[in-house]
Image 1 (cartoon, rainbow, N blue to C red):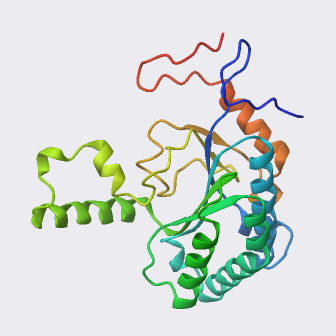
Image 2 (cartoon, rainbow, N blue to C red):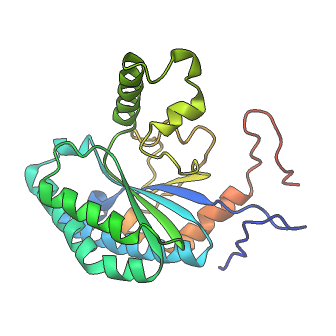
Length: 251
């Protein structure tokens, strides 16, 4: 299956998403069903990340946001957290050069609290190296929770009001958005969640206000370009009205 992805309007073309956000779920269950260690599920999940980044470039998607590690994941067993961080380090060391060569710009969102200095440096180096790239904007949500993000934004606004740099009357949705980790990024058009779970899990609660949701039964380690194309095809059948305004007929 090959989609004619075109982000411009045509006589018969349907809009493709510019920004896709993905909750990568199901690594542990994938491993459990195969009687493998959970770390093997996470390792295969990294391979799915590589496939998805490559597919995004092929399909003309300009922004891809991946939910890699949530602020709630710290409650997992220490050994699993160690494995997850080890895979992150290995991915950056192994793949960063290729991502940079292929024009991928990396951005990290989430709190830096509780992250070791070496992890913070590694993330910062990836951002700095790729900051001028334009082929694909890859945002990695790491140590991220939407409620934490919104709380941090509200705190910073309150501090600016207290310092006399901002008056409450000037606080708008646009201004509030500029205090979020995703400042400067377009809101996602499409959210994909794998593994069949039907919830947001504290992911991009502000930014997903008008996104289309597609839930995929496939576990993340098995997610491939065909699944991606099918999710986009479902998105292209939706009539996005943004609270009442019909943007385009799907008839």
